[in-house]
Amino acid sequence: MPLSSNTAIALPTLPIPVSSIPRPQVNCRIEIFSGQRIVTFSPYRRKRNCLTNSVSSDGNNSINVDIPFPSDYSELLDQAKMAAELAVKDGRKLMEIEFPTAGLDSVPGDGEGGIEMTGSMRLIREFCDLFVTPEKVTRTRIFFPEANEVKFARKSVFEGSSFKLDYLTKPSFFEDFGFTEKVKMADRVKPEDEMFLVAYPYFNVNEMLVVEELYKEAVFNTARKLIIFNGELDRIRSGYYPSFFYPKLAALSKTLFPVMETIYYIHNFKGRNGGTLFRCYPGSWKVLKKVSNKYICLHQQEVMPSLKEVALDILPSA
Image (cartoon, one colour):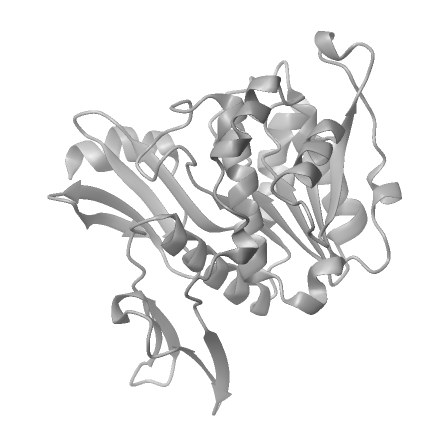
């Protein structure tokens, strides 16, 4: 999606460069002791955010996770960073991070599209500064939907950054009719690349198909990792794109999604039976409801429920 002049005008409202903002860090250390995985955090982190290891009496190892709903985006990014680190240590290769950018209690569409994308770009930069170690910055490639957004990112949020910025699609002369030039992903990837992060690939239906190509050609059967950041994949999961008209896109639910781990996720439901579907890896999926400015857990399960199931079954019956 080409960024409009309106999006560029919103740039001065962005905070000072995130690299210059002192932020508390979540120092996570994983130790192996007698075959058990122990996850610990620095003592200055609030106890309610701890992820602890418990061993049952029969010797089976289980992980008890009690991650609260974040109070702000700073805490959210800390949680997402922790989830990504644990997922990578567990060998996950394809991961999804999804949360609203117009406010923690917002839903898709609450913010104007271009502004939401610019907000995602800023949050991606903050997440990368937290998650990617300095020695791996030049080995991390961030893909934006198309070439114009790469130019915008280099002049704004990612100015002065050593991260590699790239694009999934390239506008063509017939862009107004929905056509873009094919970008062969094998030509975009370099041998030294270790981590790929794909930024909000949802505006054009072809973008997620290119992400699938990137996974197959550059991640599968390699040591590389790929994170999809705010891709609004629920559109595909829920059948928003009819399979009759978008057979390749609909097929992703059977080909790409089963090998993907959703490591951090927030989806809000508005209305009288409103609530929130929340997950922070490696914890379970929780349906939360906000009562007196506090979130209470109404339901939890190990696999992701559909949005329809949460809206029509879980929330009304809670």
